[in-house]
Amino acid sequence: MVEALSRAQTKSLTDVAKELGIKFFLVSFTDLLGGTRAKLVPAAKIAAVESDGAFFAPFACHLGLGPDANDIAVIPDPNSLIVLPWQPTVAWVASDVYLDGKPFAAAPRVIFKSVLKRAEAMGYRYKTGVEAEFILLKQEATGYRVADPLDTAARPCYDQLNLMRQFDLISTLVGYMEQLGWEPYQCDHEDANGQFEINWTYNDALTTADRHVFFKYMVKTLAEQQGLTATFMPKPVGHLTGNGAHVHMSLWDDRANVFADAADEAGLSPLAYQFLGGVLSHARGLAALCTPTVNSYRRLGATTTSSGSTWSPRYVSYGGNNRTHMIRIPEGGRFECRLVDGAVNLYLAQAGLLAAGLEGIEQNLTAGKRIDENMFVRGSEFTDLQTLPTSLLEALRCLEQDNLLMATLNEGAKTYLDFKYQEWDSYSADVTNWELQHYVNC
Image (tube, rainbow, N blue to C red; front, top):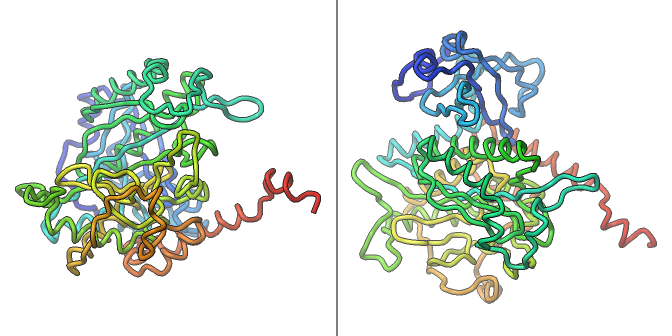
């Protein structure tokens, strides 16, 4: 039997299967590149998997292990169980990766749980919510187009007609989220043509990460059933606003939200500003975790979109309820990191954000002075501000130089960098149509 990670006692998955009529379990884990891997396990065999794991050949799973490595064992976490609303005899469970009987230190969910354990030792619980944006596309012989041919406005954000033409899909998603107890509270058409966002209630950060993984799976599955492609790609259409995944965060002790302080103009406590100072001090390295693909940097700091605003940050800065900064304080007791995009592996990004914030508390860091300006217009005037990376290569180099984040990634650090440098090299080797059009006659 493997050495178990700490978790609250729950009913066995066998008992859950009997109670809910579950016939199969989708035992799922997330790899270092954010891919979801799974095995479908009959309910009659789930007891052995809950005890000893479902076994995977590790070389196939983007965890940095070779074909000579022992199989990894993937242990489901019963607390994460979600019954598929559209297929109620199947239940999905987020899982932890083990190697040779111990938690595998390079697995994203294991990495995040280790940082959560540090927070707990300091007396804190990390709570987060995520705003997951996606764009609905239709695949054609020549490529992809926005799924709704009538969704063409230059500034389509909150457009009622465009929203309601996708009512069947959006209302189905909301109904399923209500059924699952996520408490969705708003949905809207976002700033790009074909772009939507559904907000659900914040929770403990591990639950938020698990639900984010499932949300993407659910949205893509239901879109496919309608002949559409739902993409969370940061910048799928060059002239349109990209897909963010903004993370709202707070710390709690046994009694209350320790980020909240009514005496402060913005409603944040001194401890919250220390945490914020830690996040800002590691922002350039965090970019490699929060904006993790080549395509991410077409969204981050983009110069223009058809709507007139990119909605993505360029500077390591914070403000009040001001969406031109990397960090926004929408109300007391929490702040929002707008650096994060749709390609994020939320386990890794939250691990980095939490580790940076805890260091800010431990070292009594300062967040500096709040800037109440439109940074898209006046950002260049603040010459003392750092800029966020403008490419994946720059972000990876920042990550490599950040001792805290490298230690947070633990055994996954070198593997993550190796994978991402390979991604950059592959991108750099490709000759694009734009280059041919502009340089073929050189």
